[in-house]
Length: 586
Image 1 (cartoon, rainbow, N blue to C red):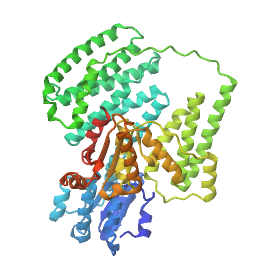
Image 2: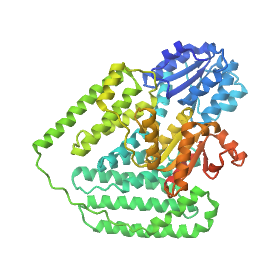
Image 3: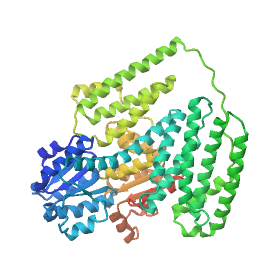
Image 4: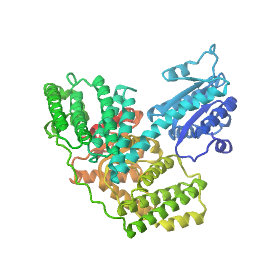
């Protein structure tokens, strides 16, 4: 069981999502403390359990909950821990939970070379990369550096994708295109890692990025526009070389369909870049067009020849493959050059409007300090709302100098709120004053690619799906980040608005009983009703479940599901990424 006094001393954030969960024997507390201190020095928060305080029946449930709410599961292997019956029991539970929920697993060893590892440890941990540490301070620093890199890489991709989506929404196309190039390069670097399914999901994410980039044209010919065009071309060259090694369109129908879509986006981007670099001359654009038509004809020939093998693919793959016809027949037109707007003289009114934005921005900085001081989720939520309103004001009055700063801070706050639970509490006067100042109301729903439904116990699973979709430049609705704090009546109204505004629906669960919970069952029923009555044409109703639940459902021939949902596509958390993108990229 957890010791509250000792646990609170080791945690510098609240109990929502932790970076690292560490399992160890109480005899190794000093070693665990050193690891925790090293991680905290890097800004990584860690939670622990200790077999010296195990006395009640809720112990296993507490461990499972703690692992569920961590990004990384770490186990400290010493001569003490490998002899502990508690650690062995915890390991089996932890490995099952971590695997089902796609957690990173990090074994850390201080065992001597002569130590004999019990079979249970060999069976569960030999497939993972071990970190060996000794008594040196540098050993602990190297471990914390490796774990920090693992976590930050995941956070970086999500943070970057959020900023891209917000820049596009704000009409800052050049800034969005610049970040998209970074996103494409980052995705390309990880495309060779992981299993075959993970690689294919990564390729689909890359395709989503290229699709977005192809829609963001730069029409200027100043130095900034030329630098951006060169950056686009460098990224495209790198990506083309990489995918040339991976794709086999002459042998694989899925690869042929992928190559057709990839070529369409790539050539559109290249022609736009050539237009910028050639200062509007058409010769280079015409040459690009001829190259495109020749290569597209080759890919189309492969695609047509392999179409008889379509029945060998899954339903989601078939849907993706069949969209290739759209891109084969789509004309590749030159980007339409928009006339440059006339420069208006800077009026006194413009200066006053700009002053208001500056005043609001400075106020948010003070508000930010108050939020950090109390580390309260309610204040971070209010601060997020305040920055979103300032962003809306900047867009309305054309204040472009502060707008990018608002977008970046909004993305940062969403990252902070992932790890901020209910531990911090603002004084009542502060909380009431800030909310009164903002006058929080039910937000207007935007358009969402997918609505993510989940029970609170599966927050971490839903978060994984949300972050994956954002990194693939989709717009998911996830109540934890899409809605501010509100009462139940306001919350219900906002959920109904979001369901109405969502194109697809995903429900994620790790226990069949969760389908009967009030909110999950309501959300499922409403969306299914909208589909049945024809108000959601082309919508998909998808289920993403843990491996154990997936096996239960399939072994029962889906009879464990309510009859109205047995026709739904069911995906396992182990490999949902590629399948989900196939459905959303139709």
